[in-house]
Length: 315
Image (cartoon, rainbow, N blue to C red; front, side, top):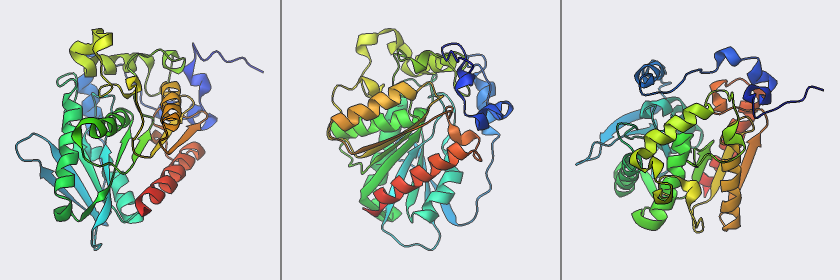
């Protein structure tokens, strides 16, 4: 049997389905010089709506924040709501990235979806992104009646950096914001700027490399990046001393993801703090397992998300 040294060969950890599709996985090296080109490439991704969901864009008065609100056609409210935060390492992506998922979720779960447009680093370092997510969430809660939303059933979801922002937002609302959050759905969340876990140091990781992770955190933290003792939990949720009294959570991560260890540790700490929490680790899945949607691993991931989300929205 071949001995795998994951410290030097992250692709060796991949499930065969992903290993066979390496040429379909994103490959980029983030830097200030390359950032605009990478953003442009992501911006070229398009989605054709099914027509089953109405999508309207709302500006939050007095701010630069906009939210995309999705509602199943012909379904009256008030409905539960999934407030979603897109991924992209804190430096990439936009709210429209969630159009396809909301087209599915809003119909399947009879819910309203919201995708928030938040400012990206490095142009807008912390706390800009978190502030925007809070402003959008507060607006949705305050205008729940107008939007046909049950204000007591608004949960938050995020993937990658969006998962990090969702986890931070849950902590922020508990401590400072005051908006009630019904649940937190954290998919391969980007939680720990310290990058000291075993998995965060693996070389050659597919999709989101050790080097990209370093760049993303440095961009997001900005002036705080070199001030270790000054970085708050609102910026890096893994630093939170107290995870009690947070909303029920699910944490999902791949076994070939550099975030694996920090996500497992965070889920474990949530459980230890008394927060109802599910943890799923998918052997061989890279960061953003949905990038290759037809794999058995991703199909199981999606089933687990759908099952948990259905239970939360039914409460």
